[in-house]
Length: 162
Image (cartoon, rainbow, N blue to C red; front, side, top):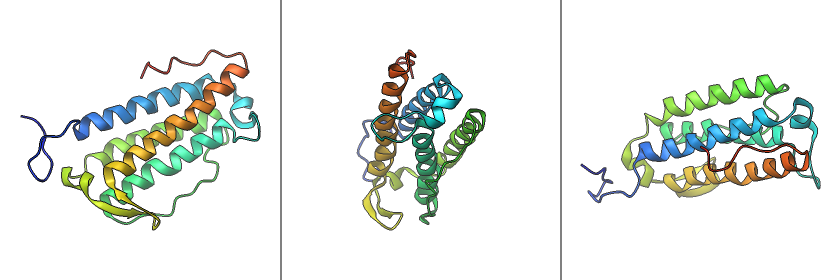
């Protein structure tokens, strides 16, 4: 039987499919982190853009706090400071964040995806839109990582292999 929303209307994509889609993007982002040499991960940028490590810190600062807000309706302050000082540490944090996403996802009721909330006291939107924004933000900034790697002469992982 097809998954349905609160009004009994079949949905186009299930909550589990959305989680899998997001985690597929996260697997690709993890491979991007792995592809960077240690020094360049934390120091390399072009045109004044942030380093890839800083972008990854932003992804980490958004993902779990967003799901905490979705599941508890309490929106914790999100810390956008650098989250890791070594590549190994950043990857460890990434993996912990990934596991926490899976744990929290199970707590989201199907009807919650259609509810409107004000995330972090400033972004009023439906929950599914908020989650899509978090995914889109990662994809957008991962594109910067592709530019960085290519400019360093490093072949990035194929974007379609999630």
